[in-house]
Image (cartoon, rainbow, N blue to C red; front, top):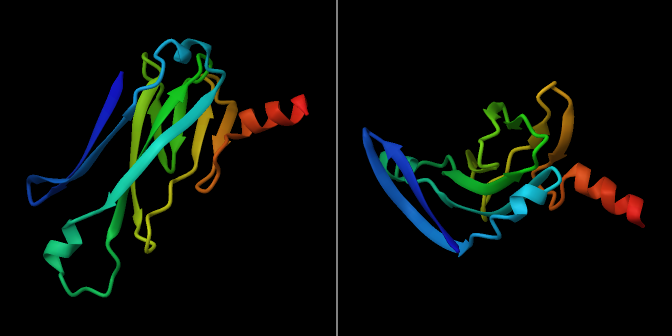
Length: 142
């Protein structure tokens, strides 16, 4: 199985193609045994909007980034930056955001997995590779 991601940006009532990529879709059965939160296969592109509107602007372009997020069965919703997203039935989603372009790429927002009762289950920061729940499990095993 392979996944294909196409990045599009809406500007002046039109969609603009920014680029695309593909990768392994992973094991669909693994979602059932996933413990809490898994963030993987991120990417992105510099947005074209400012480039077309203000070609000589000193303001940096914005970064449009994404990651594929897989959720465990106890997750009721995600907080991605300031957005709240209900956990989809298939336990998998593409999270997309914009951030200032920092010369190489943008910054991923904090992603928090939350139980239906509002309890925080796990979080992953902008520069972290592992979520807090997985990190705690690894520390217990050591």
